[in-house]
Length: 262
Image (cartoon, rainbow, N blue to C red):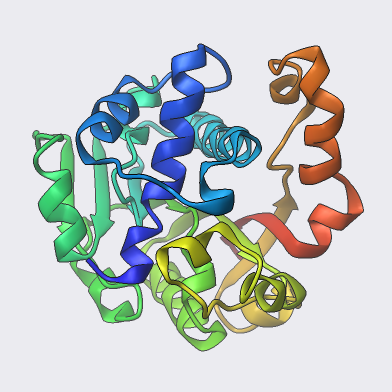
């Protein structure tokens, strides 16, 4: 497994850690997989503050995916760069087609813990090869989760991926987190992903410019750490967590965008 793929263990640990505390995110599958696949993390990767942040991010993606499915349960749900994540289990809304996509060596591990059904599928997918989009299931509407993925794609690669998704699906809904260019530069030396050997990531400063001529537009910018989730932390932890993961400083590094077709 290469260095980029190893980054999947950082959110896996965070979700497992938080789930055991019974707050923010209940993820028995993350607990199970971490017990069997986990290893000793170093540095910031094992920080409880990062674990809280990873779990909140996942919960925000879960809630958004569920809200989209409530509007159209016949949508195709596509999670690109799924890693070992169990969103397909955590989201309670019914779905007709869900596809978890990642590289072959990731899916090799994933298939040990997840079983395909008539509704749930796994697909080998390299996000740098945007032509793979045409192999995704057909449908009018797609709900696309791009969590923790965009920073490993150049702006050209990311734009091509979004453009092809729009060409494939009449109605497209995307939730995508991105580093800013400042965040990407800072991440070269001060980021938990460095603990597993990743040193090159990419940022997006001009989201509207990135989306130009893709047929996709920005709908909203969301918070990774909404107040109702921060309130699940111990009162003694909330102020310090807010200092690390909320406010102008955090937004200067990291953004969460909701996109849709024009």
